[in-house]
Image (cartoon, rainbow, N blue to C red):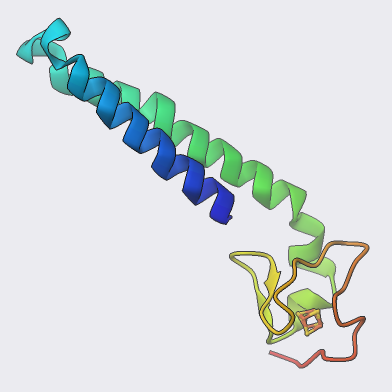
Length: 102
Ligand code: SF4
């Protein structure tokens, strides 16, 4: 999840820079339309797409793993807060020994 936020911020900064240096090319009439479209195409849409892939990739861990019912599990980052590791469907950092109900 942090990777998605990082790349979204980076794309936003790069896009703002590109729009800033090219603001005189389009003129005022279409500037806000181009800003809106470019933000949707290069920032919002990729972020949504990467988030959907992230959720799909971690679906099993989020819905049916031991960690999903543990109070130490952070669903937004798919992270065990106690061990600071990412559980997967084949890897549970504590191997069940530190599980506590939510
Ligand atoms: S303590 Fe164990 S069961 Fe709980 S989230 Fe961490 S690895 Fe998963």
